[in-house]
Image (cartoon, rainbow, N blue to C red; front, top):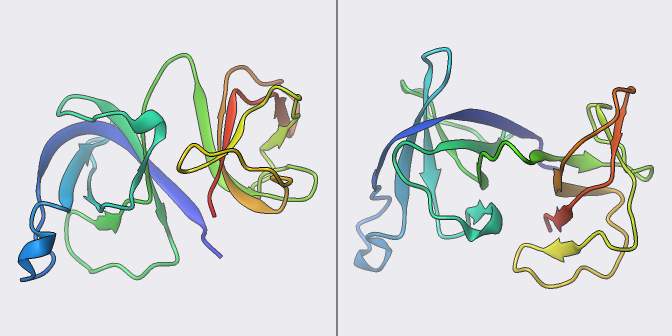
Length: 163
């Protein structure tokens, strides 16, 4: 099972990343460097399967959050380099949570509970409708305000099921 972690920062560089001598793959991978508010640096490898929320195009200077699987082995280099699974361009009008949500739709860290409405779009990563329950799955949740309770409760703007 994937366990998601994230890093937020300002994009300082985007360049081609060569992963193989196979010419067919040239240009298909990118290396994106982020500078965190605390001055830390991280590199994300962007592959053709990296999911960009709302299909945004990211440029140098944008503030983004990258999500990666902490269970995947990484090479020991500085700055750290992770395989990006999801990239979200930060927006002051929305919050995003990527996590496993249990049968009660509570995140694995116990910090967020989802209250679904009949109007909450539940989609696959290819924007097609997801017709089953989103419970007991890894989800990307886009939401606005939440209560101050523990866990905080919210009615999401949109849910992306991470199959």
